Image 1 (cartoon, rainbow, N blue to C red):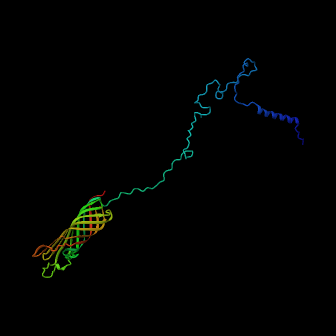
Image 2 (cartoon, rainbow, N blue to C red; image 1 turned 180 degrees about the vertical axis):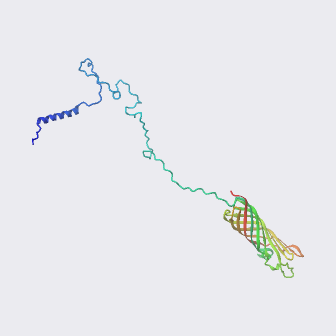
Image 3 (tube, rainbow, N blue to C red; image 1 turned 90 degrees about the vertical axis):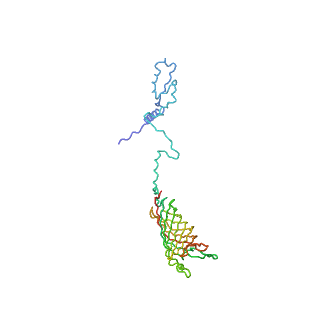
Length: 335
């Protein structure tokens, strides 16, 4: 195998010089750039072929403006500052305070909240105003004194009303007007058929009095003006009733004897229930109590004629009445 040839000193130096020259050319050689025109010297025009010819003019886009040229207008932008005419750029708008950059997101829809429909207007079963017609039926029970003949101390002595006649069935008729749905103003007339009195001495008195015989009839009438209030006339309410009027009492025996008592100023107070059945009808059970005085007292005795019952004291009486009534509202206004 032949041996490798070692480099000589002369060859090494030659290659080193080539490298140094190449590096120097890179460092110190003329770089390409913008050529600047050089002004000609005063005597250079007459010089011979030793002077270099002038460089060609630079393009208008890259050549520097001569010193004698007018300055560019203030409105013209520097080269490259404005985009080409075929491009369009949206102006930048700074974001509002508290919001980040970028498009504002669309607002979210409001959450669905269920709202129930409004309630239907109340249906009034009782009219605001109407013609009131009523009828009542029940039982009447008398108490107290029909009249008094004399007084001793704090006591009055006379004849009890239940001694002359006892309780019996009663009826009543009412005519009036319903006002404001809750109130009724009306006129009334009440009639009661009474039973046999508990005092038998009126039928069979001891001698020398003439006996009157068996009781044939006894009745009482009460008429006047009343006022009624219902707490709930549309359904079921508490009912209050007051009245003021004139009462009569009549009694007759089989011998023709008669008694007639009457007087003004009897006051009646009642309480019960008002039960609405329909727009036309309501049912009213009622308990009432009344108190008054028979200020006028006459009797008729066979063979003796009519005379006033003796005694200066009139006495006070009263009634208890349990009734159930039907009230009719006609030509009602239901607004």
